[in-house]
Every structure is written in C-alpha cells, then in structure tokens.
Length: 96
Image 1: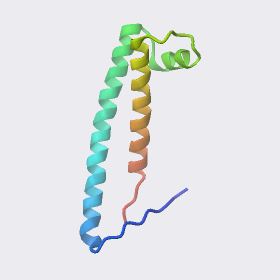
Image 2: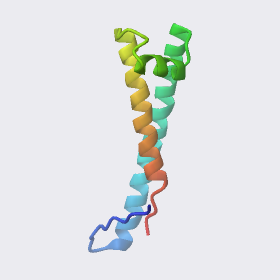
Image 3: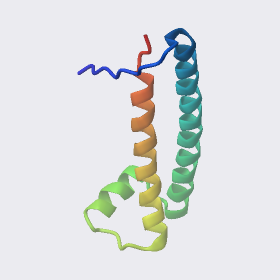
C-alpha cells in the first residue's frame, strides 16, 4: 500500500535535491552496515560450525543455551533484519 508523507517547505525545488541526497547517503550507510553485519555473521558461523539460519531456528526454539556468544549472534541477526528493513523502505521511497 503506497502512502504519502507531506513535507512543507518554502522552497521545494531547493529542498527536493537535499532530501534525495540524504536518502542516498543513508542508503550508503545502511549498505555498509549490512556488509559489516553479514561479515560478523560469517565469523559466528565459522566459530560454531553452524549456519545463521540453523542457529536462528535452534535459538528461537530454545534448543541452544543463552551464552554470551549466542546472545551476541542473535543480536547481529536482529540488527541485519532491522538494517535490511530500513534499506527496503528507503529504496522504495519516491521523492516528487
């Protein structure tokens, strides 16, 4: 469902490129964060010889104890999901 946000400004023509630039900049930051987070996930996968998907399933169902490493791994997964959600939101934005 497409929703609209209204931004009131006295000079829309000057504001529009600023907003577009801010979105591009935030997307660049998000992409970098996604790459770094995925790298951390790979580190955990190698350390524990388990894929992140397998870990996530086992951790959610209580089949793994809550060690500090596992809680950190879980946090990285949540961070990745959050960053990817933000990226999708910004990539789907249209400034007119």
